[in-house]
Amino acid sequence: MEQNFISTVMQEMLSFLNNVQLERLQEVLEHALFHKQIIDAEEQTDSSLTSEQLLHSFIAAKRVEGCSERSLTYYQATIETMIAKVKINVREMKTDDIRAYLTEYQQEKNSSKVTVDNVRRILSSFFSWLEDEDYILKSPARRIHKVKATMTIKETYSDEDLEKMRDHCNEARDLALIDLLASTGMRVGELVLLNRYDINFEERECVVLGKGSKERIVYFDARTKIHLQNYLQKRSDNNPALFVSLRAPHDRMKIGGIERRLRELGKKLEIEKVHPHKFRRTLATMAIDKGMPIEQLQQLLGHKRIDTTLQYAMVKQSNVKLAHRKYIS
Image 1 (tube, rainbow, N blue to C red):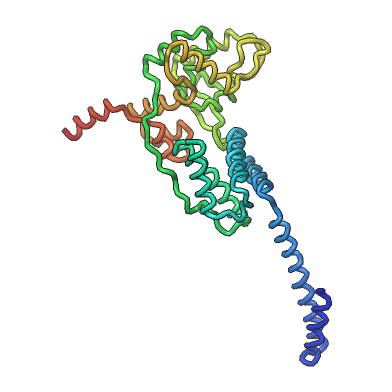
Image 2: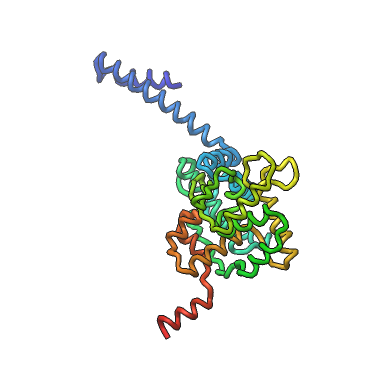
């Protein structure tokens, strides 16, 4: 078909162009039509991509960026649920489709506004990636704004809670683990990756691998140093992991194992909601309460954005009252 088109054009131009010009015209036509075939083939290939294939590429891109496997699993499950429910290729979805899905999601699951906003945030990230990769012209999630949720004061451990947990630790490992979480504010995912050689006892610090595969230094107090050394001295295994199971073959502890251990301790002591992340929130609140600059706390916790740090740090109401009396009353 292309050759017939070229021949027709050449015949029409015979009376207007000389031989050299005709040869040049033929070259230009052949070149232009050849590239058009390539572009058409690429567009046809792109348009045939399924939602699942695009999701697979998105997850692969996020993995390269350094997202944890736990986050990737959450992303994939969230987007897969949306694709199965909406039943439209993601390249054809409109803002109203996503907005209707979020509304239905909240009604069916009776989800909190925080949960719905997490879903919105993940979908927004996915569609923004599609836009950046030129699979779509504009993200349909761009006009769906953050879901406003009621700010609640999240619980922290009291000094009494921490001391009760320390006093009732029957294992040196558990005591060292609690102290390290309490004094560093590190994430439990960072804790399970630590090895013995990561600990600098002289400087009372260690390097952790945080979100996005970013390393940062965290610091611990003298009590934690002593309890860590006691725990390591009692160990007889050769596992390089800092925290391992109590029974042979002494495998590296996993996040679920630590969460379960702390939950059992909290139930025994009648302390509500004992989990690793609460140590992190407690440290942030304590640091702000004692006047630590928010920028330094942000660095200590490994937050990319300072508003994330502000969500962690809750100022004690008693200190607000004292500050009011000092500066205003």
